[in-house]
Length: 109
Ligand SMILES: [Zn+2]
Ligand SMILES: [Zn+2]
Image (cartoon, rainbow, N blue to C red; front, side, top):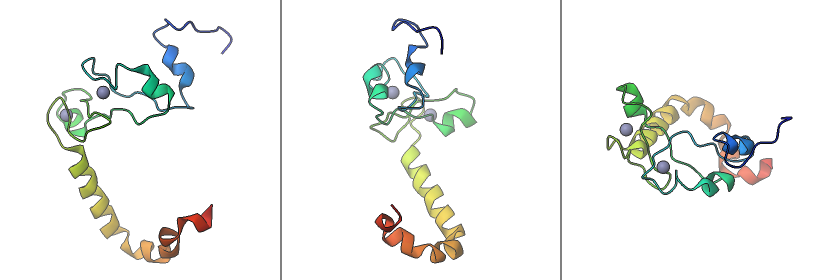
């Protein structure tokens, strides 16, 4: 970047892109979304709601400290666990060969 951005530039937060978490959704009633320091600190930020996206309601808004979409009430955590479970079932044959790595991740660092 050759032109320095001013802090009041609407795209100023992009300066932190790559080094910190990037906001993907914005809800002006949400204290996490409206506090830019969360992003600068690299804190987990609010997420899109796949239920909203699937039903063309926009990106939705699942607060970083919650699992339920504040737009439609969809429970992102339940969905995630279900997906995790299904992918584990599918990967079970592969998982066996990596079992040691799962049991002792420090060995790989
Ligand atoms: Zn938020
Ligand atoms: Zn939603």
